[in-house]
Length: 294
Ligand SMILES: Cc1cc2nc3c(=O)[nH]c(=O)nc-3n(C[C@H](O)[C@H](O)[C@H](O)COP(=O)(O)OP(=O)(O)OC[C@H]3O[C@@H](n4cnc5c(N)ncnc54)[C@H](O)[C@@H]3O)c2cc1C
Image (cartoon, rainbow, N blue to C red; front, top):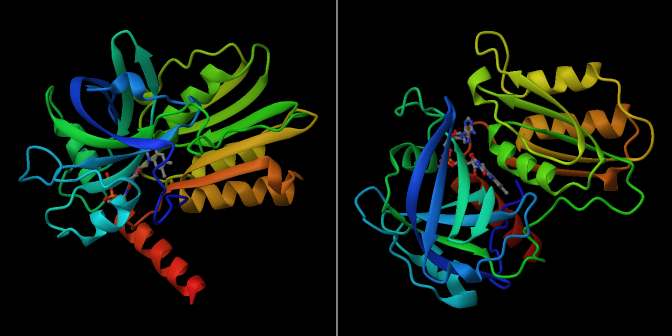
């Protein structure tokens, strides 16, 4: 998980936003469109642009949160956990300027059973979201910002992308950004066939959709098996891998160990980890940072 324990603010800033509309994209995904004051100052870098959202607690109408500038993280941590907003990492799927709006595609994990241990506050919030619902986001104010990881170096001949539903918004953003004719090999694992969506691109993209077989396979297995069996293009590849942390690790190991990828040409990010909430992952990062500082 690359969510940092204490993300710096600049060139990010806080925006209060509200839901304009929601659209179910398939059994496991919902697209939520947001607007808000001063949204013309939000500047997504496209591709896999990450940002943080702050959700109200179920008993609140809006997140209780004060913009403390660079001191926000300490202030947020000092709040009563029952009152402070729930912080989660997401991807800006698309930003538009007229009118000023942006879309976020939420994977509805545990949607079939909201009481399931694999559901979480963000997934539950997205499932119930209605126009007018309010959130706070920490999002970029300049396009060239550190929240974009997809940066193939000069000399890259082709692109490899793998991910699950959580990575699908980023994969869509990357495909929309690629130059005409770029060779791209893409594997995307989703919960159901109905979660497939159009992925407009000028690239020469070969996209393989893999619907998870809930009865036999663990999440992530399908991507790894498909990749193992695949013939990859000649030349220098650049890989971008995201999704469940264990799967991401296994895919990276396969590319570096068996396919001879240069480590520096593999950008990998655990977007979530089985059995761990984002709070658990932040606590681990904070503990590691404290131990290093001693
Ligand atoms: C940089 C970045 C960008 C991301 N972009 C997106 C995005 O655009 N869309 C998106 O949907 N997600 C995205 N994610 C993933 C998202 O932040 C996590 O899935 C997050 O845990 C969801 O929060 P929650 O409150 O629903 O669940 P949590 O409270 O964090 O977790 C509750 C339980 O659900 C499990 N869980 C979490 N996510 C999943 C899942 N997808 N499938 C099955 N079980 C799960 C956890 O292991 C835990 O057991 C991104 C993550 C990162 C780091």
